[in-house]
Length: 247
Image (cartoon, rainbow, N blue to C red; front, side, top):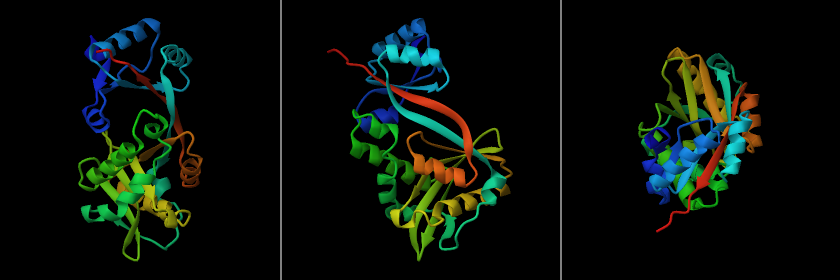
C-alpha cells in the first residue's frame, strides 16, 4: 500500500543528501494522513513534498495539523501560442535555439535567478546546493535531456537569457520550464522576445497553449508574464514535512 502513497525522488535525494519523496495523493483527511505518515516512516523518508490545491481547506488543515511547513505558493499561468506570437519586443537582442556551448555564459544566471523558490525558502536545504540544482537543470536542458528546446537571447554574441521549452502529450499544450535573464538585460525586452520566438516555434508544431509556473511571492515575474498576456490558471501550495528518523 505504501508505494501508492509516496514516490521516491532519487535525484533530489542524492543531490541534497536526504531521503526525499513526494506524496502521490492530492487530498488528505486525518485517516489518510496517518497512512501517509506511516509510509514515510516505514521507508525512512527524511523529507516529503506535498502539493495541495489552494482551495482545498480540509487538506490544508490536515497538513497543518501534521506539522507540514508551507514553503511555496505555486502559480501556473497560461497563454495561447497565438498570444506569444503577438508579443511586442524590442529589437536589441538576437534570439535562437540554445546549444551546449552556451552553458558557460548562462550558468551564472541559473545560479542566482530562483532564490524565491521553495528550495531556498526551506532552510533545511543548503542554498548552494539549491543553486547547483538549477544549474544542473539548465545543463541537462541544453543537452536535450530535460527539455525539447532552449531559446536563448544574445547581444553582441553574448548569451543573456534562456527559456526551456517542454512539449506535453497529448499534443497541443507546452510548458515553459526555467526562464532566466541576466541583470543587464532585464526590462529591455529580452524575456518577451524569447517568449515570442518560442511562440513561433510552437505554432509551427501546431501547439495551442503554453503554461509557465512561478512563485506567489515573485511579483516581478508575475507582472512580466501578465504584460505578455498570461493569466492565472491555477494556484497550488507546496508543503514540506521533515521526519526526525531515530537510530
